[in-house]
Image 1 (cartoon, rainbow, N blue to C red):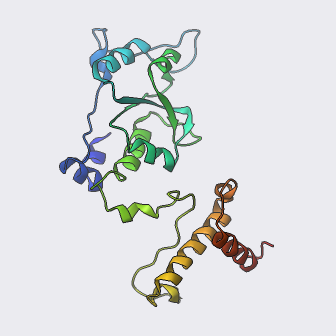
Image 2: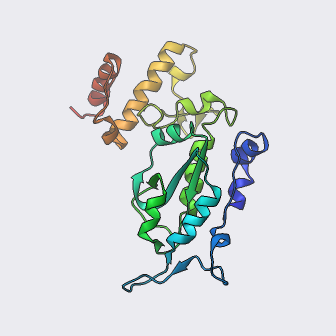
Image 3: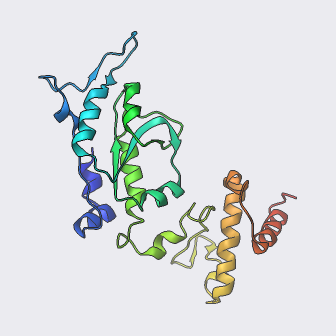
Length: 231
């Protein structure tokens, strides 16, 4: 499942440049069963199979270091946010544990530092979340991409990203906003901030609930509310 993710685009280039090292660990290698089983039927009955705690414990003992930060991929974990990606990008080593199907023996939680969910839905396993989280972290590392490429990302400063445009300047009757073509960097910056606030207000107002607004942002928000008929 990880082969395409590791062999394309920014992730591959980051690996090739030595920006990041990624190791895939199959915890079947730490099974003490002759058939390399890593799961078993749930105690008390129920559907599915449950990942065994002893297998995960042995895998972690063999691979974690004093600098490892161990995260369990689970829908029961704390919701993953951009600020967590920024926090994780500063860590020396992260271990992401991927389950499959029914889940983990509850005792696995005794051996991890964090539990992470990428949303309020259930997948067949933790591989896709692990790839998503890895991508979000790697792109923040020095020399993975230019710093300017991620500084204005959605959520990087608490707002959705402002609209982006490129050529052709006019297409199907819609034109690139004139303010982006006049070279006035002060007006462009103000436009970017205003449109980021507009998008956030209309699409994700929850992101504004605890925001400490600057005087400029308050002024722009008032303008937006008048323009959108929200007053």
